[in-house]
Amino acid sequence: MYADKQSDGREELASLASEVLKLLADPTRLRVAWLLLDGPMVVGDLAASLGRPPAAVSQHLAKMRMARIVSTRRDGTSVEYRLDDEHVVHLVREVLHVAEHMVSGNPPHHRGELHEV
Image (cartoon, rainbow, N blue to C red):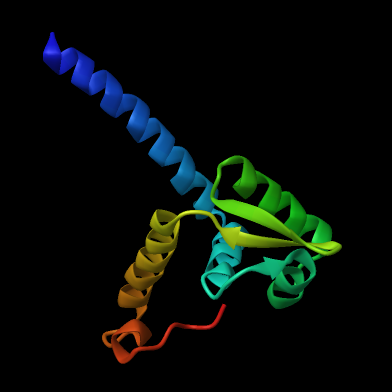
């Protein structure tokens, strides 16, 4: 009986974790998160860095906000987006490090660098 209850909790947690990974699996959303590793940014700056229209970036940010991957803070008339959780920050960094290992024997993070978006 205990094992059944424990597996039920794990199933739900695995499902939620999978949803976070699915959201970050989109290249644009991952690049947004990558940019936000350096600190808060407004939509216009994110869009310019990504070479994407602000409306498209806003749609991605809305999904990320609903999933609590990013949060917002109003600064005058602009809205700044930031990564909402230290675990998300670690997750984004780690997945980027894994990718760097796949393409390089001496990845930039081992040299104290991080590739540009």
